[in-house]
Image: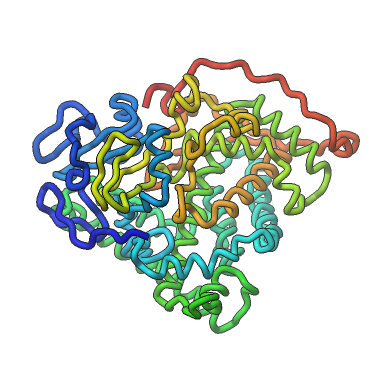
Amino acid sequence: MAETSTETTGAGGDELPRGFRSAERGWPELHRIPHPPHRIPLLGDVLGVDRRTPVQDSLRFARMLGPVFRRKAFGNEFVFVWGARLAADLADESRFAKHVGLGIANLRPVAGDGLFTAYNHEPNWQLAHDVLAPAFSRDAMAGYHPMMLAVAGRLTDHWDRQLAAGRAVDVPGDMTKLTLETIARTGFGHDFGSFERDRLHPFVTAMVGTLTYAQRLNTVPAPLAPLLLRRASRRNDADIAHLNRTVDDLVRARRHFGGGEGDLLDRMLETAHPETGERLSPENVRRQVITFLVAGHETTSGALSFALHYLSQHPETAARARAEVDRVWGDTPEPDYDQVAKLRYVRRVLDESLRLWPTAPAFAREARQDTVLAGEHPMRRGAWTLVLTPMLHRDPEVWGADAERFDPDRFDAKAVRGRAPHTFKPFGTGARACIGRQFALHEATLVLGLLLRRYELRADPGYRLRVTERLTLMPEGLRLHLDRRTAPTPAAAADSGAPVTVPDAPASAPRCPVHGAGD
């Protein structure tokens, strides 16, 4: 991996975090890249910007300025890329590597050199990756499947109680409970008791606090942050302390009582690198556990929430997905591991939801050496750019003029084969892409299948999708009404080879899924 710069000064003279470069220092022809109108000296492009929605503001600027553009804030210039050709070039691992910057660097006080937040030159990334990769093999995944089913059963028990009481369900809240319990049980043998609580577990509250604070740090000048965010900084310190205490207690219990049988924590504590014999240090174990507990549930809960929103808004899609579940699973009480992968249309629903709203909405890439991006934009070694994933997934040259429209058939096999590589990147790219992506996809497909088989989903007619941002993306205020389905008939369940025929949805005019207008 290329080593990042260790001491860099931004255009405004302020010292930047380790591994973080001002774009002005690495883009020799930055003046050729468009920026928003009405730039203000010193402050930059702050007019008309909502600090609570920086990603959605960037989408608005992207539509205005094109596939590569720049924004300036408090003396630092950032280059954004979303054109498919540019993103494909950035995926070249021989010339570009992951860059840790923006909100990701702000998470280092809690996650340190964990897999997600490690700088490329830090040795613990490769050590942890090599030690933990076998935990995501097919055999390991099959071993997690029964625990995923058990946690999903707790969700459906909770939803059955809400249905019986005539209450709508809190989709983001319940998906967060589900995915936290899943990663905690499968990875660390721990039960947070989320479904037995009226409110989110304090670990989740602390996690959301650290993510929100990391994003807020990007909205104020670095020298003024201690003054402007004094109270928030104290809360963040308390949140980090709570996360550390929770994980330390979890690790202490494992060391004392044993168990795990090869799960993630067992590997972190007991497994040496197969070639060097190195082991993870106690401090790094803590950082990896926090990384997996946070990243292992936050993005998956968002993906499930967006998918359930789109299913409730598109009854013809839900009917087609439900028919597939009935056909493939029949009346089997609990599908086995291999049956989940057979839900190809359900997986398309998930992929299309991740296309429109990838819950990790950006990833940064830096030049390993002096190079020219896509033959047009010179970049010096260490210069970096931010790939704006929701706009990459909306590039009309790839996805068509109706790219804003929800259409799972964009992911049928023929359509996927016909697209250029590197146009769909919900899990990042290259060697530093999400190590747990197959875990997340299996879990989410399983849960969608179970919920579709059990319930009819009814949207609130007055709800319009709003997206909340805390480094990750999540639908805000999404509640659904449920109707309990009757079980499929034995004859229908037995006819596992029959095709599913559902009328195609009429094509609708492109419509922005946020607030019903261009975002």
